[in-house]
Length: 236
Image (tube, rainbow, N blue to C red; front, side, top):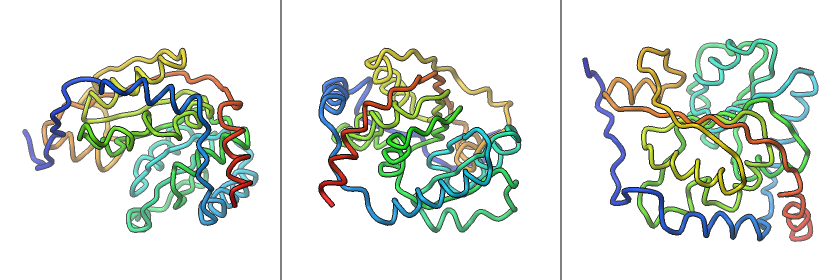
């Protein structure tokens, strides 16, 4: 029985954006030169110190919201260090039950954090991106991570990558963008009987929405972003 009131994503865009691969290739060829904000550098330094105390393989939970997914991952992978990242201080402060010792939440902007992590040669075994803002208007294409200049850094982090969305076109575009880098992926519907990994997933499921996941093995290509952060350093 449907018990939620979350509205499904609506858009005039009925398939992959016609400019998608042009954007992906442009960002592949041209380094992202935006300087890293000091706040995000400090957050990355904090994360580095924490990981050094953990001495475990890393899992990234990007866009973790209130931290439910970070807790779920930490319990599922007790021999890994799980780092939940989100830019909203309000959402992170709503995280109530204590996290396991192998998990940490951190406020940061993903665009800067991913570039710093890639340049530092971080190699997470898994990288999760649960329900990113889909920016469904066609004019918002450049705000979607796969059409953003940060995408080469996301690719460079490698590991098993999983994204989930309630707008399948978002994952179709992500799949096409990964394929442009020679990376295969698979999109499947999420079994509604599976436990919800996040508050968003629970809300969408309660509203009767179909949910999808993309799973891929990204590989590792650190050269894609090294020149980007060199440019950042010279700009500061």
